[in-house]
Amino acid sequence: QTKLINVAFTGVDHVARDAAKEKGIKIANASGYSDQSVAELVIGLTLDLYRSLSQGNQDIRTPPFKGMIQGNEIRGKTVGIIGTGKIGLKTAELFKAFGAKLVGYSRTEKEEAKKMGLKYLTLDDLLSESDIVSVHLPMNNETENFLSEEKLNSMKSSAILINCARGPIVDNKHVANLLNNDRLAGAGIDVFDMEPPLPEDYPLLHAKNTVLTPHVAYLTDEAMVKRAEIAFSNTVQFLKGNPKNTIKL
Image 1 (tube, rainbow, N blue to C red):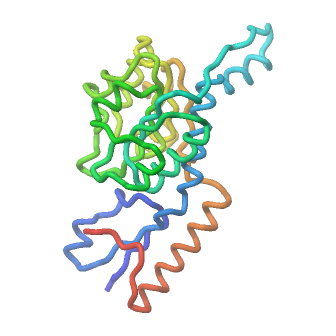
Image 2 (image 1 turned 90 degrees about the horizontal axis):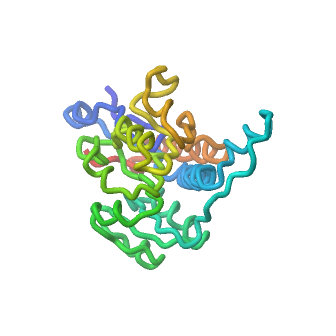
């Protein structure tokens, strides 16, 4: 009889949690293995949007040369962190190093975040005040379509949206509409409503001012080593009668 489902990822939204609970099966995850890698990709997507790195690389290789693109700095911008768990806090830490002002939204306010200088706001206030919005929520019934059309409409037209969490948390079709109508300045998206490859008619593929990556925020050499160490440790500790990293069912 199965006693443990050991998930070598952070998210467990692909696991039948209700069935596991009914059968008394514990679920463990590898929480923490990719905090740094995800946070760094958030910064990378932000820099690409702010400094047109991908566009500049393409322009300089494709004659005739179209000229230089003037960008923006992260320093002094207001960064809204939606979800201040481990990855959200690591992302906030990196943005702080750039000189950004930090605001956040979370069901649970963290003292660690406040000590970093992050100010907690309502979701509506965060969305209306932030220059950069970064999503760091788990995927579950409560967070599906969390950034709905109505919520996204409250973002500033000069703002950019970064999502390295889960695709269905955000109404990506409406994000594309906002981008194409100049009501959002840019989007850096690593996660979608399905896993890549994306269908040809997927709206974000044809939206302006987007940088898209194929769900790779977690994927670094360093994170893969850490993931293996955590997953193996979860199994060993469970067999010893001392379960680690188990999910509340």
